Amino acid sequence: MTIRPILRYPDPRLKQLAESVIAFDDELRILALDLVDTMRAAPGIGITAPHVGIMLRVVAIELPGGGEPRLYVNPEIVAASAESARHVEGSVSMPGIAEEVERPARVSIRYRDIDGVTETEDADGLLAVCLQHEIDQLDGVFWTQRLSRLRRERALKRHAKSGG
Image (cartoon, rainbow, N blue to C red; front, side, top):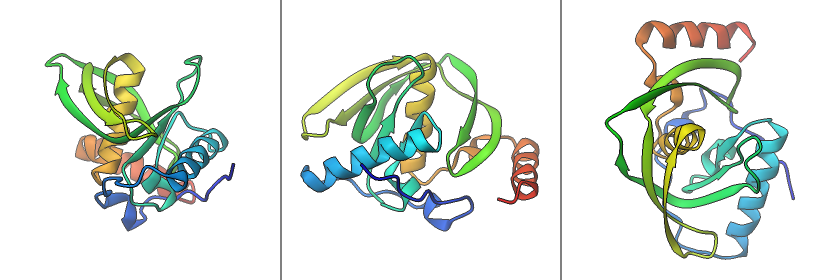
């Protein structure tokens, strides 16, 4: 469909709470397809509507070798494991910068599909990381906020030096 411009950190919209989707219509379908195209062009493996300046709770994820892109509307974490895992994360809004983040190893989420049907999903591994990362973004929590102060400052300095 259309590759949309991606907001760059520190755009203040990246720290805003996204609103729930209430209309499951053609406009939502177009947004979802645009998110997939924009994510692929970035390139990235996850993107939210807020990344393109649309403050709605819509997520697209496409894992390497993971088949079709997954779309999540109004996703929420309903359970998380006590066990944690570390994974290197970054953002399409801060290209080229990545740091290791610790998060729960497994999550259960509830969301609506593109037609508005309520679904649940259990995830671990990279999918669990991506879901938590993108749901954080919907909640206005940029991934660098999950870093220690020292690692966050280091990442932000690298971002500034890269012209970000």
